[in-house]
Picture (cartoon, rainbow, N blue to C red):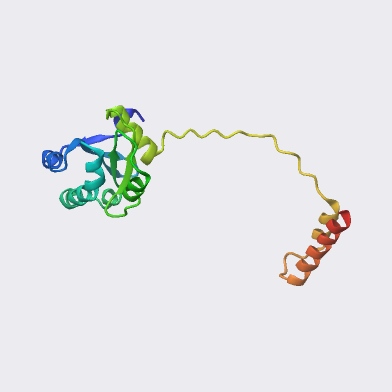
Length: 183
């Protein structure tokens, strides 16, 4: 999947209204194809103090004005808001934002100097599609299994076709005796 395919921007009539009402440096909303249409909002407030004080109000506003226009239930349930900050926010603020369950999944991305299409695609790749994860499985040579004849003889005597807990208990006791004697 090429980088350009991830985020498809949506033009909203309320974009200017949102940007001025909440003192935003950046606002973009779009769709990502991932098991259906996932709605993604990228927002950066003019100052971190505004983010800290207004993120709930912003989230409520977006939920009231935009989410009702989304007809697909999958998209409504898969709605992400990325709050971008140029600096490092306090842990408590980040925790409060990201653990708020109202209407959307919220992710705080800190220490971002510029918001480009490439950066947006990296956010999406890392937090939604996870297509940035490279999985490498190392096939280690396993040791050959060596049959223990004492245990094998005990198991061979069991009648596994009938359920008899007493036989199984006797077998386990016999195996324990073998290992106790070896110690």
